[in-house]
Image (cartoon, rainbow, N blue to C red; front, side):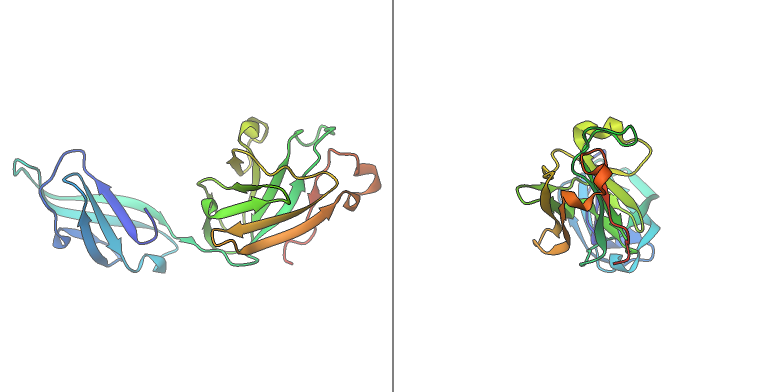
Length: 219
C-alpha cells in the first residue's frame, strides 16, 4: 500500500491471525491489523532502509473457518521504496508548446519532458505540472533514477511509442508566445520552474514544429 504497509488478501476466509504467524525477511513487523476474515495489514517500520529489493513473506499455521490448517507458505514481492523528491531532483528538460506545423520529425502533439537526475524512485502521482492558467496532476507511475519521461495527453499515447511516457488526461495549455511552467509536489512546494518566450527558438524554428530543450541538465 505504501512504504510502511503490506496488505495481504486471502481468497477464502481465515480464522484470526496473530503476528507470530507472520515473518518478513530483512524487515521487522511492528503490528498486524485484521480488517476482515480475508484481509489483514502488516505495518513495517524499516521499509525505508531498502531502496529496491525482493522480500519474502512467510505465513504459518493459517486456518480456514473449518479449521483446515496450512503449515506454511511463502509470498515473494518485488519492492521499490518511493522517495520524496526535493528541489532539483527532477527537472523539466524539454517542452513542445507549438507542434504545428509538424516537420515530420516529432508528432504534431504537445508534450513536456521530465528528467530524474537523482538516484531516487519517485511516485509520479505526487507531482503537479502547471502553466500560468491551469494545473495537471500526474497519474500513478514510477519515475526511475536518471530516466526521461514524456508527459503527454492520454489521447496521444499512440503517437509516442518505445519511450517512457506519463499519460495525463489533460496537459496544461502551454501558451505559444510565452508561459511560466512549474513542477510542484503535494505540499505545493516548487521542485522546478522556468519561463519561456517564443523568441528563444532560433529564427528559422520560431513558427512551430520544434521543441525547446534544456541544454544542460546538471544546472
